[in-house]
Image (tube, rainbow, N blue to C red; front, side, top):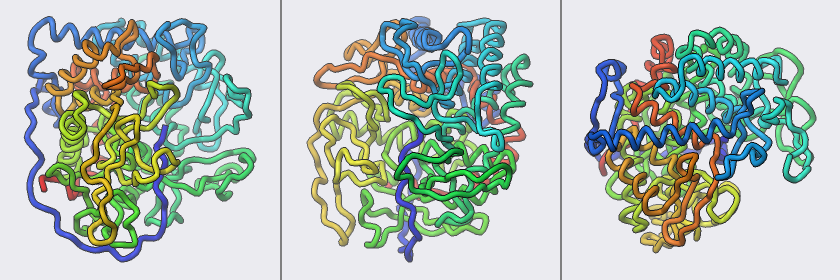
Length: 541
């Protein structure tokens, strides 16, 4: 699911500040295969995982995670449920799924084959079953995009919510379709038997349906999505049709306007298909400007202006623990690293993502182990161990302010108490809590698996602790989240989070299988010249 977008307004004059020089901290990484090195991003394994027992443990995590995904998946439709409790019982499935969940199951099936968990024949059979269901599922035909919610047992669009009976207005999300599109491209490259059908479904998807050239930031931004039927009461948006095919739709007023966000995958898909210009990538904020009329954001950034493809970009960064880091909206691992599971961003864009990714991971680790003293780390949206779902992150790494905890559009926090970190905004706004005392932290295993692609030793050790000490593990792999002090555990499995676990393990243990399948030579020719020219304000302070 996409994170809330930040307010989109016309930018005022920007202050130019020089960022401190320095390079990202060196982190020991071990390349396991020559072909991965040729790609530019090594397949990493923890150097501490050298013996048979350690490697076996890592593979066991993959086997158990795959077991939970199989339990979530309907045998007839091939669609995975959104979530399932620790029982893994068919009757306990959530009774709804999304394009993101379906995509996650597709790439996880490819990973399961690469790790030898299933045969190539079973992989092809599973992929084809899911793709045949996708082909017949109701969707927005002019754009080829899918609705947010379906019944996983039938493939029907959900118009009444299964648990509450509330009416559902079918919505077409740009980021949810983005993850489905990314998965289809993985299948197109990774499985010859399923490739033609995946190519057929992907080929009808129009990413420019979401591209708004009239957005406040030029040359344009990606909409959150649209309704193709009358929207719910109180909807704020407008009618139109960006591709000029089919009737007008009801577009949201909000756009995805930050670069450090999982939503950049939609921009990538538009760029590699030629439906969205590469300059759109530079329309999004790195940080908001450093002037006092922007002092509502988390902290005052440092940076300077640069121009790429004719677009003026303020290359701002936040300062945390001696590091300059380009923040996300909420400061979560998901925003930073999920697109990196598909695109070798660190090697294709060494002066931007090559600095920011390892620094973000390091900052999350130091926040958990040093600043907050949790003993564990890895913060990202996940199940709330106290019930429901919540967005967790490191407040200092997010643009969203944390001074109104719990309110929509405000910051993500690393603990249950929603402890606010506030260092002020230069001379514009005084600090209110620069050295907070944190409470009951919440860690989610999928964040550590994503981090394993950059800090393998530390991520592996953290996961061992979550399994052995916090006991956040069941027959379907790691439970979705755990508190570090009170011992509460969200004893369920979320399809997307399990798919992130599988994708990360696939890149670490199976020669960057997800990245290789998505980032083909054609994708590299279209995307690398765009993202590779940028220089973030990230580095050591």
